[in-house]
Length: 431
Image (cartoon, rainbow, N blue to C red):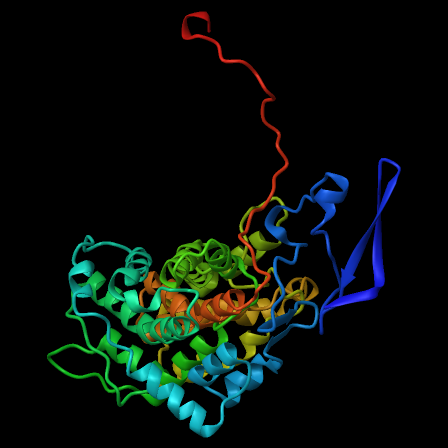
């Protein structure tokens, strides 16, 4: 909202310009520069947009200094402890916690849309057997617009609603089938008598020869992973979804763009990178060597899974995820897995080291989620697809919010041009 009592003055070449200052319900004030180019003929320069608000939103708020993450005002630790993923989905999509009747109706709608079009099986079989599950997901989700024509009109509120439910419902099936195809096992269909997380685990691990009994502790841990990754404000993949959406692209194309962005190792691949680091360490006795390297300013090595770009104190999701990790490891009784042994000892030594405490390099959500997924039996190639399943509701909520904003316009970042100035074409024989 605009605070008419606040302005910022920019002086350029002896000319002063008054810029409005906008204040949100939380967070720093924002200088409104929308008319700056028109008035002063200059752009601002902000690579990575780290100091630029690209939109206004009512969905998620992060205070990196406090280590706070709020969804519609509710702290993430309360939601992870007291709620469950589909209730958080409802909250993100519609703005408030549901009543019992509203939640039952929402869960029913999601459950009844978990199957995918049968012809999509042939689409999967067009990929090579060794295709990465994320490559499959990018293709399959993008192709949904070829199978669900009745929910691609972004100007129809009902079609937007149908597309939203379809993607939340079908994404676990799409990810599980990508995994099954990757390992050469038959596809497992969803079951309507199972909850969201249990359904996903069964579709990943059941085989026709024998059914898969879902352990409630594993299902709860999976549900928490989904909940803790549901939305994270204007991160790279969410901004990608919004930018694609600003052109009027259909919702399936927009979410496919978000999945493609999430695939990057600096974003959704962080927990996979963490597990790969643990494998590189190999045994607990090598941990001091790697901690020393992390402290060495001349060594490019850094401990994956520690610290966070946004959270300058601690990751509020990590405490809940650590609890789940402890529960899963205790349930499975995994004491001889070398990767998990390294993880537990690395966590212990890093938390006891004054250097990491001083730098506030605490284990983040990716460190613990990777441990849980490894213990459950998922290969590292499935870590990012699971992240995509979790984040789908965040992408859709942001997409719906943008579509309903009458002031939204196509994204068009500017640039600082450093190339050649105008020059005339030279015929090839004269070059």
